[in-house]
Length: 281
Image (tube, rainbow, N blue to C red; front, side):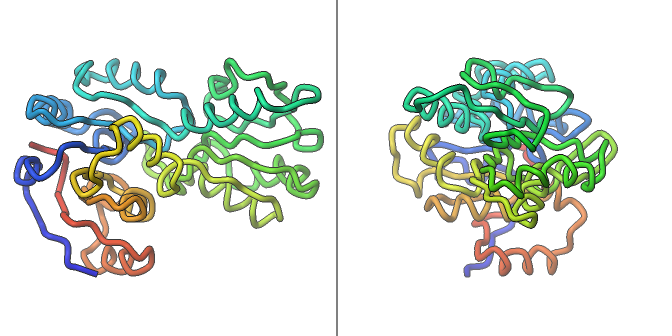
C-alpha cells in the first residue's frame, strides 16, 4: 500500500483529473452547516472545467438533497449531479415493483424526522410494525434521539421472520448538530446481528459507483478522483471502483491521529492517494 501524499489545497491536483466524486457530510458540511470555503471551492473546481458529482450516503433522493445544498448557500450549477444512495435504491425498488406480481408489499420504513420521501412514487404500503412487514427500508438514523435498543425492539420481529432489509445509508457514524451519533449503517449491522439479511446500497458498494460512472460516460477511472472523510466508505469505495481518492481530515476523522488513520487504512485495505486538511481550493 503506497504512502498517501499530503497536499494543502485542492488546486494542487485538479489538473490530474477530469471528474470528481465529492462526499457531502464531512467534506462540504457538517450537522451545523457548510464548512468555510467549501461553496467557493466547488465553484472554482467547476470553473476549471471539471465534472462534479456530489456522492452521498443519504437515504433521501437526489432532488431533495440538491435543493437542501442550495438552501445552505451552495451555488446552484456548481455540480453536475447530486447522486445519493437513496436515489439508487429508489430506482432499484421502482424496477422491482414494475416486474413484481401479486399485491402491494408492506414496507417498514426507518427514516429521520418523519421523512416519507424514500417511498414517494412507489407502489408500496407503509407499515409501522416489523411483525407484518414484507421488507425493511433503512434510510436514516435518529441515533441522536433514540438508543440502539429502540431499533432492536422495532426490528427484531422482522429479523426473526427472515424479512429482507435494504439499507440505503451505510454510514455507521453520522454528524449531527451536537456531535456524532450512530448512523443507519450501525442499525443495519444490528439487523444482521439479530439474524436478518441486509442489502447494502451506497458507498463503498458497487451500485452507486456504477451509476456515477455511467452518468459520466464511463471515463478512464484513473482520471476520476473521489473526495471524502471516511476511509471505510469513501476511500475503500473509490479503490474498489478503480478510482483515485483524497482523504479530507475534517468530518468523522477530525480528531484522529496519523497512526489511527494508518490503522484504518490497513483495516479496510485501502489508502487515499492524497490527504487534504480541508476542502479548500
